[in-house]
Image (tube, rainbow, N blue to C red; front, side, top):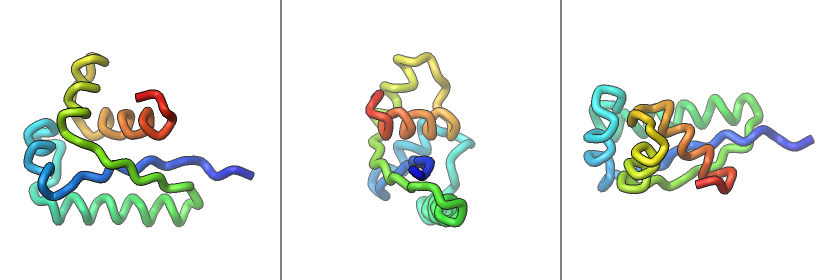
Length: 90
């Protein structure tokens, strides 16, 4: 039986301020807090036996996705974006 895929957005420390600018109040205050949240979500997905796929995301690519799809930049749209990348749709 194939495991369900759980895409996980990976943002570099160098890009985090740009993402904070895009995500506004939806972003964690610090890169360390962001990494902690991602680690917690990864562990939860592993516990639930998902196939975790780490997806490197660049702020310009995410901004372009949001503008071309008419989406506000927030955590839900970030997860949709990485899901599309994982599925080969972006």
